[in-house]
Image (cartoon, rainbow, N blue to C red; front, side, top):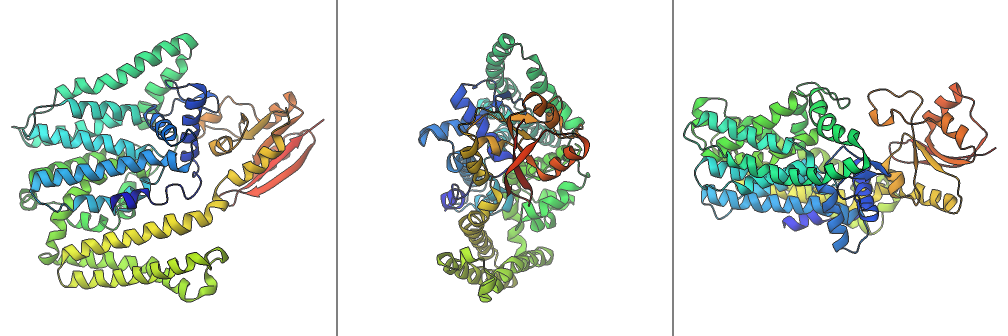
Length: 528
């Protein structure tokens, strides 16, 4: 069942901007040009992320035939999600003695966890390393094991996935638990083990950086992308309460229940098992740590999702005893009625369906809509009868319907409008045999990943600190002065800015197309 949840639809639509094509492009250049230690994007050093996730894409792509595509690029995230599912299954059996663990089902059916398992992004791999480190740290703290190598190596490989945050999160959670339990043994030796993977990489990288004299890459990687990005970020500025709201839908359908079950009193805290206490501390540390930074993205909370799933069974079992939990569970079920009812209304009034969905997929739409509404109504009934196990399964089944709809129908349907592939297919035909350079204003990796030629990166007319990657690049006017015969990809607003402030050379508009978010992309041919 978990395989169906996480693997269904992985290759059914093109890589989605901005992150997926960028990471796939980095892995592609690793395989093509041999940049295994010092990742490159569009033939420029890419210091934003360490290389582990790019290595994993290259590995799965090599196994699956050597070409990077949607399936091979997303497979590492899906495999990481499956591994987390197995870890939670084993940990719940170990800590509770149950033969039917439910925490893996809870994680599997939560929206953001499910979504990230289908994305070629680093965060699911990071989540796997922090989950391993957290569970192993708990085992050491409680005396279940004296070994620390697995925890340390998990943190070390996590650093290779997304930097020091993979070390800080499990260590911070273990420190909190140690402060509250004086007899716990802190896994000190794990700190040494955690240094091995990153030091091996940094040593090899340092030799290459020294040979190529790219010390700015080292400084960017070690400081700008870690300390500076946390303390003084240049984008994604959000208020300190940001995660309290985004968690509501990212961990849906369990988020309201989690908030209702927060052990805010000493009595409720004492009722918890030790692994539940550790999980709450893990969740709290992740929330506080990321909330203190001005730069916030909702997927940063991913490491706490497995541990949020661990504390949910205790809360679900209170459906029969707690009126608050029962009302919250009923309200959660009712929320599902909004998308389910809307879908059913669209199906009933058939002419509202897009033409592409009025043929074979229509029967699947009808089945999904009717099933979804029935599941929601049954869920509400089970809550009213104080039955938490059927309620749990109804939520899992509702998420399964969502998977079918999202990855089997909706995303493949909107793919032509969202993807740069169709636009670049036309561009490739035009520029393939022309030696004139191809450039792009405000470069996006999807246009290089789906292209056949190197793309010169150009800045917009007004570049500020919010777009540091544009600093130091030539703009359109400067480029065309040096390359009067050239091709340029540009968004319509940027072209209007340059035309109003610069005397551009003569050009022909060769191609115009909407690509994602209704932005008109234009291909220009400059000439004497």
